[in-house]
Length: 489
Image 1 (cartoon, rainbow, N blue to C red):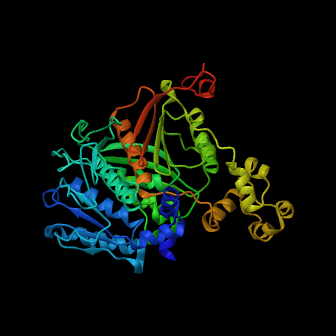
Image 2 (image 1 turned 180 degrees about the vertical axis):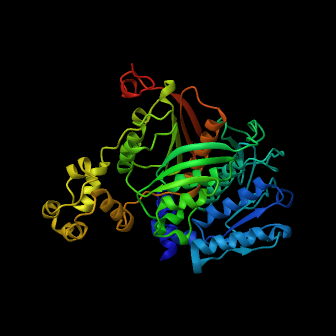
Image 3 (image 1 turned 90 degrees about the horizontal axis):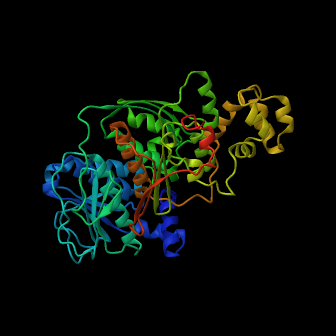
C-alpha cells in the first residue's frame, strides 16, 4: 500500500494518458524495470554525475525497480543511489548494480553519455552549459552530440528531466522518436549540436534576497538547482503544509525522514548553510501581516503555488521581478513578471478558475471560524462567541483553542490536521523539476544581470516536446497600470 501512495500522482497522470485505471498503472510501475547507466568517459565530469544522480532520483519516484551501472571507479555513486532508494521506498528498495554488458530484460535504459544503442529501449542524455540534450529510441541518432563545456549543473539537471520524462513516456507507450536539445538560457529547442552553450557561471557567489512562496514540488526542483549554483543569501520561505507520503512521488528533495515535517523546514535544510532560510509555516495572507512590522518586500519573489488567488496576492506586492513556476500534467510553465518594465503581470497572465475556493472560505470550512473573523481579525484570540457560532463538529476543537490567536490556531490546523484529498492533481517529478530548474535559471539570470525587457511566458510540453517562450505585456485596463508603484501615474 505504501508504494501505491508514493506512486499515486505519477500513476494517475499515466492513467489519464493511457485510459487505464490508477490501479493498473500502479501495478505497471511496480513491475517495470529501468536501468540507468553512466558512460566511463563521462564519469569524471561533475555535470554527468549530476545528471545520473537526479535521473535515478526521479525514476525512483515512479518505479521502485531501478538497476544502475557505473564504472568501477565510481562505486560511491551506487552507494548513494541505494541509500536514496531506501529513503524513498524503505523495505521495497530494489536498486541493484549491474554489469556493463547487462542490457537485457529492461523495459527502459537511460544512458548518461553519447552512445545510442539500436534495437534496445535506449535513451541517451548529456549536457553542455545551459543546454540539456536527449536522443530516444528510433530517433536515428547513432551518437548524441556532446562537447566539453565549463561546468554548469543547470544543463545537467535539464538533461536528467528530459531523460526521466522519456523513460516514463516509453514505459506507458507514449514516447515519439525524438532527438533534441533545450537551452535554459535562450528557451530554444533545436537539433542536438545547434544551440550555444550560453555564458559561463560566475566565478564568485551572487547574493539572493527573496521570498519563496509555496514549497511544494516545483519549489523542490528550484531549490535543488539553486543549491548547486554559485548563490548565497537569505530567503523567507512561506508554506502552510507538512510533507505527506504521497508527496514523495514528485518532490526530488524529499524522503521518508521528512514525513509530517513542515515543507518550509525541508527547503531550509536543503539550502543551508550557503543560503539562510527563515521558515514561515503559515498562510501567505497571515505572513503578509508581517510586512507591516519590519519585513521588507524584496526585489524578487519566487512562487511555487497552484492557487491563482494567492499568486495574484503575491503579485499585488509589485516586486521588481516575480518568478512564477507551475506544472500541470505533462506541461511545465514559468512566468517571469516584470511589470516595472511594462511587462505582463500575473493578474492578466493567470485567470482564477471559477471553482477555486477563496482562502478565507477554505479556512472557515476547515476550522468553523467565521470568514469575517479570519479576514479582519486574524491576530485576535478565539472567543466564546466563536465557539458558539461554529458548526457543531468544530466546537470542541475551538473550545480547546479558546484564547489562542486565530492565526496560530489556523497554522496548527494546517500543519497537523490536513485531510487526504481524493481529487489530488496528477503529477510527475520530471515536469515539476523542469519548472523548478527553469525558475532557478531565471533567478540566476536575474542575479547575473541578464534580465528580460518584458515579461516572459514560458511553456514546455513533455508529450509533444514543444516549447514556447513569449514576451508579454498587459493592456492598459489591467490593474497593474493603476496600482503598480513603478508604472502608476
